[in-house]
Image 1 (cartoon, helix red, strand yellow):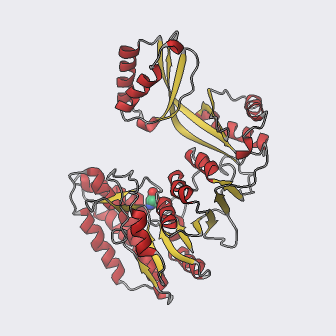
Image 2: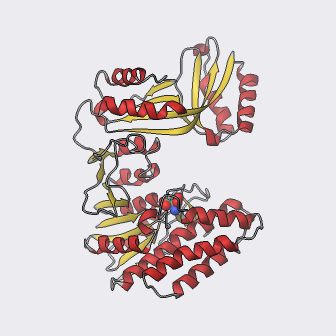
Image 3: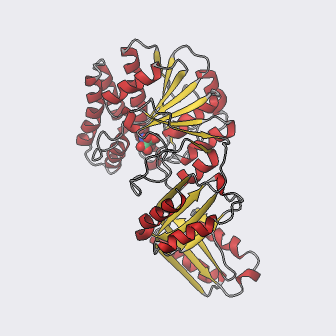
Length: 450
Ligand code: ASP
């Protein structure tokens, strides 16, 4: 049994939805279909989820949203017309959106999630009708009825473990094709909550684990996962055939856009292989993400990079002798609800790398003030505009010379390394550079390792 997830670009138009029906019906094992909200039809298009957010924000500010609402309804209406589905579905969608917009606005996050979820929910309803119109026995399944229970961290929800049993009962062993909306579930109180953005991947992974699927097929708009961002290195043509969960997690965490990093987690626990494939070229085998694979020593599988980091640098003479220094520093960040990404340290100094979006000027001011007051440092500095580059490969383990190859490549390209971090797992090396050197650094590393 296969669970197939189709991303935003695969449900963006009638033409794309027709491809979904073709792909699913071409293989009898494809029984469960998870869909995103309609995404971009062209590079300058707007995703339905972003349109919903805009509409919700207008409603929260008590502004007129009729124009935005009409544009949203039209996105779905276009699909309905082109697929020649019954008109009633568009009227239903409009009614649904108006109902959500009229909902309780006291808790902004809760209201926003309810609106955001409308993209996937209505997408699943339309896709199930597209199957039916082709004579396929398919049914939309409501995450509420299926028992998809999430925590009430609106916009950043996590699965409650008991959901697996509920989902198994509702989804396993059916004779129809299930079309399930991605991205959201329900809290115990019956409120809609969403995963982080891009979270339909997570839904697909959860369903694959719940029904113990043989494979979780993740359909997107590229032939494979590429070892490096083709926008930074256009010369890359060869996709990755197989990689491990650990490698994928490291790469997607550091900016690989193809697959949500949290979506690997459920699959890892149950050992369900993930297959990233292209809706537009289903004949391609895509990339397999597996528990283990044959590893060639010294081989790097991919290079990922992301911007938007900042470094909090603390210097204090004899820091190494001060027990609890690190704990107290991290406690200050914890009190401000800031999660840290890396923490390389020297004898008398430590750097904490955090996401810039979590560390605005006010937070920075409070954190720096507390560090001065509570830790008596010699110096505290915050540097913004950092990029992180991660070189990943199981084959790096126990291989001499990997770091030197990377640093040589960077130095020859004239890139200044601001930070290096290699965990003891030895499957990744992280380099911090200035954002304006990111592209050059990635290109140099690609040259060196591929
Ligand atoms: N539609 C949601 C987003 O744009 C979730 C997804 O597509 O996976 O983030």
